[in-house]
Each structure stands twice: as C-alpha cells, then as structure tokens.
Length: 83
Image 1 (spheres, rainbow, N blue to C red):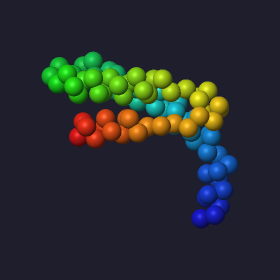
Image 2: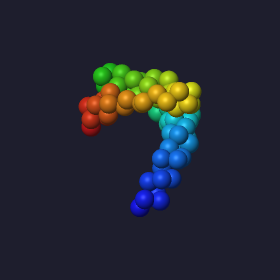
Image 3: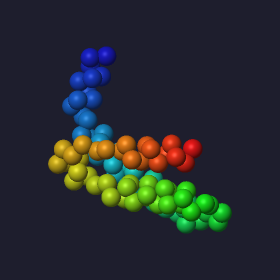
Image 4: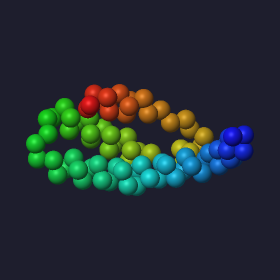
C-alpha cells in the first residue's frame, strides 16, 4: 500500500494532466454534441449541461503545471440537480 501511495505522489501530476486532457478533449466534445442533438430537453437541464461543457472546455494542462487546485464542487452540485 505504501508503494502505491508513493507512486501516486510521484506521478500525481501526470495523472492530473491525463484527466484534464481527457475531460477537455473528449468528454466536453461528446457532451456538447449530445446537448445539441437533444430535441426534447427542458431549458434548465440544457443550461446545466451547457455549463458542464463550458467548465470542461476551460480546463487546460497549464493549470496542472501551475499547480492550480481544481474545484469541481459546482459541477458536482449541478450533477445532483440533474438527477
């Protein structure tokens, strides 16, 4: 277990860069296409999903390199609102 913790500490920035690139490069694109293709969607849900897309596309690897701490509390709250 200690070895795993050491690897996570050592390679944490690499994992963060991958995750940020995945969110902004894939998830945001797919979600944006999904939102645009929804024919029957309440306006408030559409606004929340558009907010997801905007948040994800605004993520950048530079933020990871600068050591910025990501705060996804707003996205989590919006996700609960959708459910």
